[in-house]
Image (cartoon, rainbow, N blue to C red):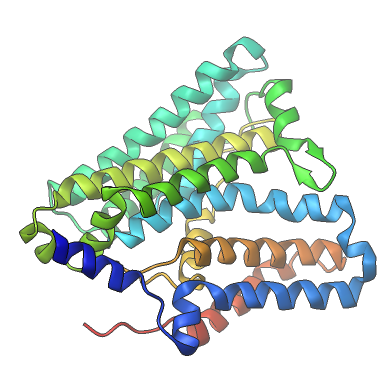
Length: 326
C-alpha cells in the first residue's frame, strides 16, 4: 500500500515546464487571466460591473457541477457521456414534481439528486461488474435518458417554486447565491481527492487497474463510487437549470456532456485516467464561462458562441492536451 500511495503521489506531481503547468492547471488559468485582460481593454471598466460579473459567475455553476463529476470519472479511467441527459431529466422532473408548490421543494430536490445517484450507480455496476466499456454504457444511457425525458414531455412543463428560482437567480452584488452550491461541491470533491483513501485509490485505478487491484484496492467499488457521485452532481446541476429557467425543458442539458469533457481536458486531466488537476478543471470551467459571457458583454451575435467554443477546443487539442507514455 505504501508503494501505491507513492505512485499516486508521483502521478499527482505536475512536473516542470509547460507540461507541468498544463498538468497542474496553471496554463488554463493563465489563458483565463489573459481573456479577462483583453475583455477589460475591449469593454473598459464596465466589464467589471456587478451585473456582468454575476452573469459570468452564474455560468460556472451548472457546468462546474457537471465537470466535477466528470473529473472524478475520468480520473478513474472512465467517461460519462450521459451527464447532459441526466441533468435534462433532473430539470424536467424537478419542475413537474414541484409544480409551483413550495412545500414540495426540498423533498423533490433530494429525490431528484438521489435519482441521479442511482443512474450513476447503474453506470458503475455495468462498467465494473458487467465489464462493459464506459463509452458504450454511457452513450446508451445518453439516448435512453433523453428518450425518457421526451416521453414525459416534448415541451416546457411544470414550474419550480419561487424560493428555488429566487435562490438560483438572486445575487449579492456580483456574487450569485447559487455559487455557494458550487463552492460547497468543490470543497467536498477536493477533500475526497486530497484527504481520503478514495482519492488515492481513484488515481491508482485510473493509472493502472491491475496494479491497484494487486495492491489491495477494491477497484470495482472505487469506480462505482465515482460514477455515483458523477450522477448525483449532474442531477443537482439539472435542478439548478430548472430553477434558473423556472420551468422544466426536455432539452435543458443538451451539450453539457461535451462541455464537461472539454473543460476536464482543458484543465490537463488525462483521458486515459490516473492524472489530473481539480484546479485545472475549474480553470476550464472559468474559461468556457468567460467565452460564453464575452459574447454577451461584447454584444456579439449569439450564433458566434458555438464557433468560439470550437476554436477553443481546437486550441486545447493543439496546446493543452499532452500525451502520456505508457
